[in-house]
Image (cartoon, rainbow, N blue to C red; front, side, top):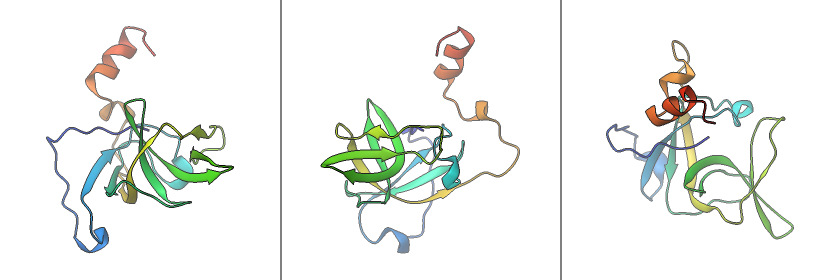
Length: 130
C-alpha cells in the first residue's frame, strides 16, 4: 500500500479523535492489509507526531512510498507487518514513521482498482511495466 499525498482533495475529520498533533490522509492502493479490512480506495487518517507504539497501525515512509502496516519491534529490529498471510514482513529499520493511523474510511461498492491508480501507474502497466 502506498499513499497519495496530493493536496487537491480534502477530508474533514472531527477534532476529538486527533488528541493533538496534525492530521493527514493517505489513499490506499494495495491489498497487503486486507485481513485488517483495509482495501483499495480506503482513506487512512494519520496523526502526527512521527511516532507509534508496538502493535499500532502506523504509516511509515520507505523508499519514497508511504506504507500502512502494523508496527512491531522484535530483537532490536523494527518490522512493518502486513495483514495478509501470503505477504512477508517488511524490514522497517530504514522507514521513517509518519504517525499513527486513527482510522480508515472504506468505499464498499462501485469501485474498481483502476479508479485509484495514479495515471502514471496505469500508463506503466499499459506499456508492460511492473
